[in-house]
Image (cartoon, rainbow, N blue to C red; front, side):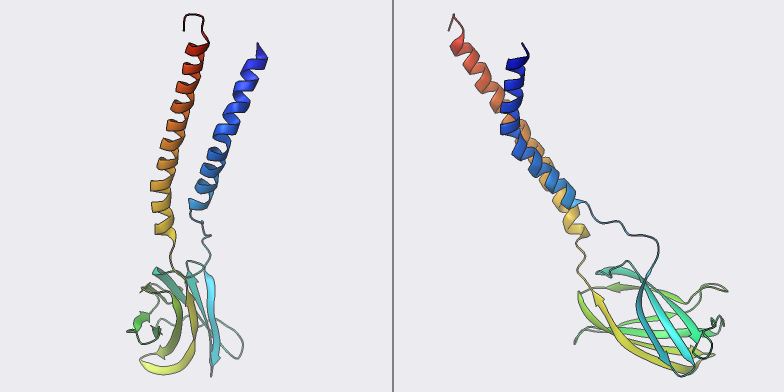
Length: 192
């Protein structure tokens, strides 16, 4: 009694195995990556009396909204500059496209100056930061920020369209196999 069930299982594995593996592969690769809460160090530089570290989230930077935070330290001893009058103006330039301009200022006492920017295109942006202290220029910094394309939307559409389509295909294969088995049983029966 167990041998026919085992043979049917093996046939089902041969028929549905590749489809199930394909479905598992698609499901695995359509899930977007999760990122930790910690930001990424996007830029670090020193100019005169100040050393700045720019943190960015998400990591890696992708097109769409990005959170930027600025840590300002004294170059001489590395102590944190937490002056509420300290702010930064910045711009991100990609080729000949219009600059993404932002102003960073502390949201509250003892917080890092922060800004949220919208990055519209992938590429390597030229970064220009200008520190201001009590509306006087204090220091200027230049660097680059690489930005990748955001594939999260593509993965969501991929998962929303292809996974249901694969389930429908598996269902149709199952129904087809059941009909073939039913026809064989009818053909093999003494009355047929």
